Image 1 (tube, rainbow, N blue to C red):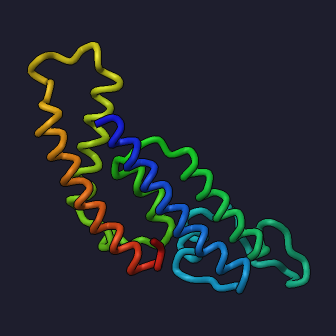
Image 2 (cartoon, rainbow, N blue to C red; image 1 turned 180 degrees about the vertical axis):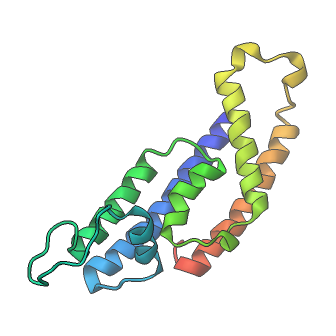
Length: 166
């Protein structure tokens, strides 16, 4: 369970980075401002953004290029500091990239929460595990991970459809 958790965590971080980096490239290369960039500016912008009195005088709080880059950098930091796969971790990594709640199946979130909790129990509470809490790694754990992989596959297809990443 612990190793599977780590692999899922890396996968979610990579997907988040791919979506973000694709949008960042579109912005830097072609000034294309789409769904991802819009969402990042909404969720990760600096406070105190304002319209300048003089359009020729810009600073970090009213220069759109700096506001957008700050948003990308903030999201990059969140992804880099991620430490888990529960719904709150996924929300921080993916929601600010323009994902709508309807784009994520509840079954995936439940499996991520369960896997994250089980991993935490194994790693952080190993000395207090009783025989009643031990699961069969060849059937119970395999079944859980197989179900999670199936849900991740659905999620992956949706991200490909939405953002063209693979």
